[in-house]
Length: 392
Image (tube, rainbow, N blue to C red; front, top):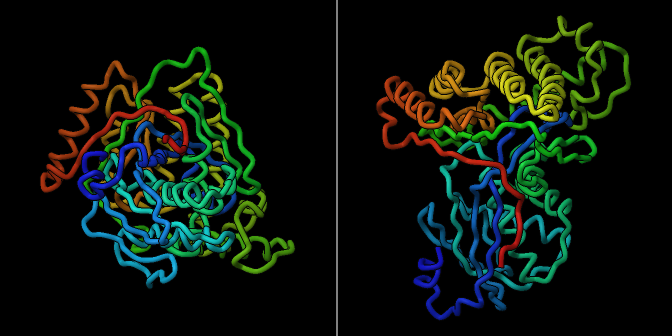
């Protein structure tokens, strides 16, 4: 990155280059319930997004990427309409920051993600890097919780994705060898260290070879279905409710759901059923983690993946095949889709003693089913890591 940076900005001394980093994240258990104010879990990975930059006192934004073609170039005084490519993420960061602060100094720089896009919340990692960089060179003191909120607003309000705060929270709050346990209703969280008896484990990322943008899938529709389900369940029970957009399944007790689920249309009943069962699975996973029981932890992950397929109805043939192969492979404790599951990747927790056998078996079986993805499919061995930070 530094060699490329100097080729783009040859007059910049090495000592003037700033560096921020945000990790990718995986959610072992807690799929699709953060936007309903559920409990979720997360790890930050030892792979992520790096941004090298220097300030531009004139307010110019001048960016290049190692992952995508083109240049992003504009002034803070005249931010253009949304870019149709990767440039919209720095615009989203500027949008969120400008709601609170006056930005006068711009950045020129180079950004790079170390893993393929899809399922690891790379968009949140990119946003966090841009927000940290812009705050840095404009001398803005931003706390970790404010950083999470800014990145959430950037993606929710500017990009237009109806997500919760899982992604940003994992990428900011996580610590190496700790499981993040987050309540997305009030943003309270715990970092639970690995038990002394916890065996070593790998976090394997199986990239399907298919990229996707959540805005072009049924992601937003499913979050709306959850709200409608919650609204109707409260009404059937005669409980008070507010505006539909402010209603969440966290507002509904499980006995109320069991009593009235037969009144819901099938898709809404499935979404609510996934929420209720996933909420319980998060607590089961946290208890297994505390006890150092990776076998149980993994089985809960597999159950989460199955519910994502059957009740949340996400996934495509390639992703479901990857999930199925993981379940049948010796040495994998557990796994599921990483992210929304409409394409992207699967994540697995596995025994390092079986690493080579797992990589060979999963890759061979998957590419036998989808030979056209040879060269696009990839697998990556990761471990837990600390969250987003300024490096220099």
